[in-house]
Image (cartoon, rainbow, N blue to C red; front, side, top):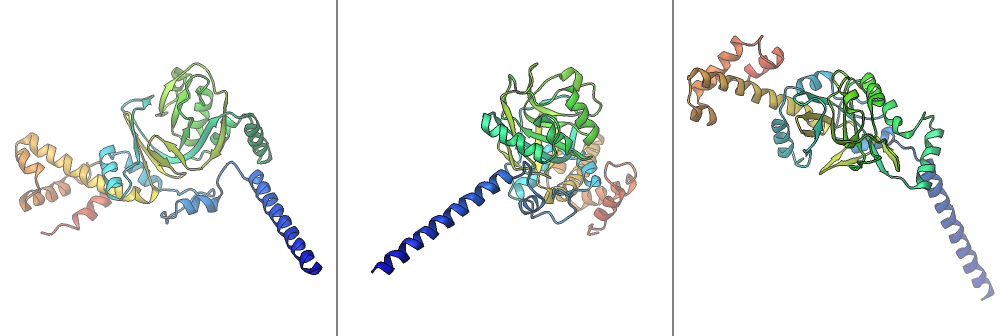
Length: 320
């Protein structure tokens, strides 16, 4: 009986030691975590993308597709996204530094939260261990690559909420060649307006600067309105709306949008000329109109806002 009690006590002691070891390892893992997701984590989140990636794991949609995406409307992009099962990829109600211009690029994400002293202290220690320089508000900017769009959720904070001004904006433009999408406020708007091509979307402006905030994640999933934005998503921003496109759907959106663009251009011209009625153009096109469209494509192939090679591929699909 004594032997059984000792055995039971020893087992309980071992269980306690194992539990303490698990907790210790979990704590060490928590404190060892980087602010940014690693390559494997980003790849897992974006597993539907099968193309090239950045060293950090983000999908690298080609520069050619990004350039062609600039001609695609928000409506065309959203229609494809909804059809593919992604209805929550659009957010509206933005202010835009350059209304009428378009913003296209690959998302580098950043997550901000209200400051909590002990958490910010830990995050700053992590940043120092990772070799990050200066205040944490500049850390995501240091990671930008050409063609990126800095997408940050600063939870709409107004006073003491701006996370960029003209100095950081100048650095963003120099590194990425693009502007930003910020779910919060900016400062130095007049200075930012002096930066060429800095098309940016934000909620408002305030003369203060960020305080009582902390950066809790870089290249992590973030929420912008109804949208879950992942690192490497492709941004399409126009007027006061932004679509966040999963990388694996960019090519389909571009090619579908280009077909719509060409058909609209042809239809509008024929309506101005009085060749067809609105009822004919708005309905399913007859074989006669389809033939006319095909001939129009061949006649204007060098003048249209779609790559010649894509138009030639489109012409191969005709059935007459």
